[in-house]
Amino acid sequence: MPIKKTKSGAVIQNINRQTRKLFNAEEKIRIVIEGMRGEDTIAAICRKYGINDSLYYKWSKDFLEAGKKRLNGDTDRSANNNEVEHLKRENDNLKKALADLYLHNELLKKSVTGLE
Image (cartoon, rainbow, N blue to C red; front, side, top):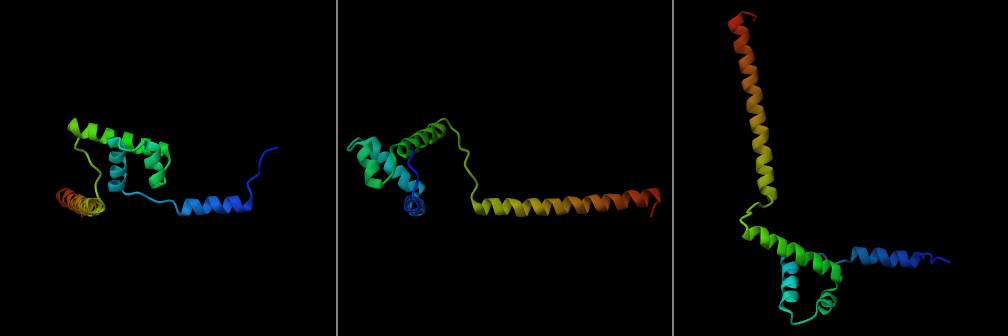
C-alpha cells in the first residue's frame, strides 16, 4: 500500500522550501574551491553547508566551464540592470528620432509633389 503524504509532512516540506539558503556567487565559489583543495570530503563539505552533493557537483561543473571559457578568450558577460535600462532608453530615443525623420520625409515628399 503506497504511503500517503500527511498534512504535517507537506507543511514541513513547505517550511524547508521557504527556509532554503540561497548562496551568492562568492559563496558558491568558496565552497567549490574548498572541495577542490581536498582537505575534506565532498560529502563533509556538503553537510557543513547543508547542500546536496549533486548541487555541489553542478556548481563545480559550472565553475570549471566558466573558467575554461574565460581562458579560451570568451569575454561575453551578462549586462547588469543599469546597462539594460540605459540601452532601453537609448532604443526608445532612437525609435522616436526615426519616427520624426519619417514624418519629416513624408512632409518633404508632399511639398515636392505639391500634394499639400
